Length: 160
Picture 1 (cartoon, rainbow, N blue to C red):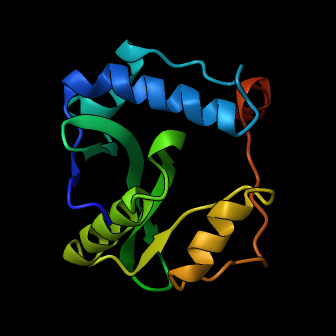
Picture 2 (cartoon, rainbow, N blue to C red):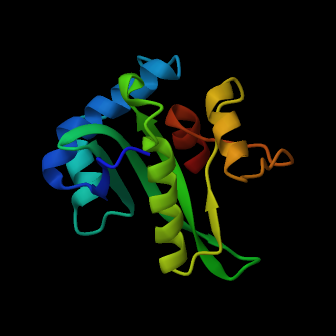
């Protein structure tokens, strides 16, 4: 890992760079039109008084090169909170410097310091570089679970 890699909590002034990384991530994940958020929404959802999600920024020196968004969930079986990684992204020209591993270690330590029983995330089944990385750090895929989602009109219709 580069000695100049720094991880810090995101600040409201990072909303623009967070939006930039979200957009880059959407392009990488082959969903360039899926981003519906904006700087104001990021400010409201990550930095308001009742925010339930949090973000960190990864820097190489003073240059932001990546980010992660996470939140705390709960395991009924463990009777403990868990830390759930929603998104992690490192700019392509900064990969291979240890930034992704630094972000994951930072979040693992955050999970431990908050007495979490788990640190979880999902990965697209075609993202072989990410899968190989997660395997290399000892993470285990949970293949027996299928993710379900209600969103948009389906969510509205069901809630009626």
